[in-house]
Image (cartoon, rainbow, N blue to C red; front, side):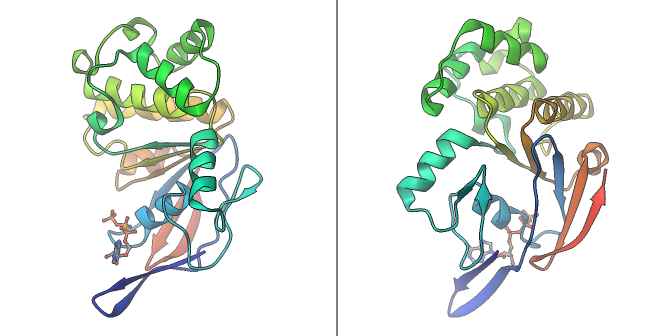
Amino acid sequence: MRRTYQLAGSEVNALRGVDLDLAPGTFTALVGPSGSGKSTLLRLLACVDRPDSGSIMIDGTEAATLSRRGRLRLRRRTLGFMFQAPADNLLDYLTVRQHLHLAAQLRGVPDGRDREDELLELLGLADRADRLPRQLSGGEQQRVGIAFASFGSPALLMADEPTGQLDHGSVDAVLDAFLAMAEAGVAVVAATHDPAVARRAHQTVRMRDGVVEEYGRG
Ligand SMILES: Nc1ncnc2c1ncn2[C@@H]1O[C@H](COP(=O)(O)OP(=O)(O)OP(=O)(O)O)[C@@H](O)[C@H]1O
């Protein structure tokens, strides 16, 4: 896929022909220098932007040519997205469990205590279900972000610098959570400058100047 931005009369070739396969059950680290196109690529995968040309197949649906409404539906049903700051992924007045109720509502899937408990257990949050975000550590908040983005099993979970604001111990717990989601069959991709993320990913995709420079195995 290709994506060019128009800026003050000139063109910025943010993506110059990227070909990428994010398989179910795989945790991919998207790495590369600042400005190499990682966030642009995530925005296309998240269906908040469209490529100028190319194809984006998500769970059997061609997303590149969908209408705004179609992309919104696809986003709700099959995609999860996480931002760098834990607080940006959560609502400060909802408990952990209430976040899962909201996720179920937004995604149009049934909630239910068993499904919630299973996911919270998987992410190491079983005894945090009734807490508000401010009663959690940064790493715990980020794992609630993963739970919120993952409830109802999206095909693809995306994260932009998910460990950028976490201390060492929390980073490991968040990476455990990504690997657990991958094991449950989700394709997980995280854009990152953090070598700890790349070390534990199944696959590393290194970008430079809007192209994939190298694929690596984690
Ligand atoms: N809205 C925009 N308008 C014009 N140029 C843009 C826009 N967004 C990004 N760019 C440019 O596109 C290129 C790719 O940017 P992108 O944000 O995708 O890189 P990145 O790899 O995510 O960088 P970082 O690691 O710093 O987040 C850069 O040259 C950037 O300046």
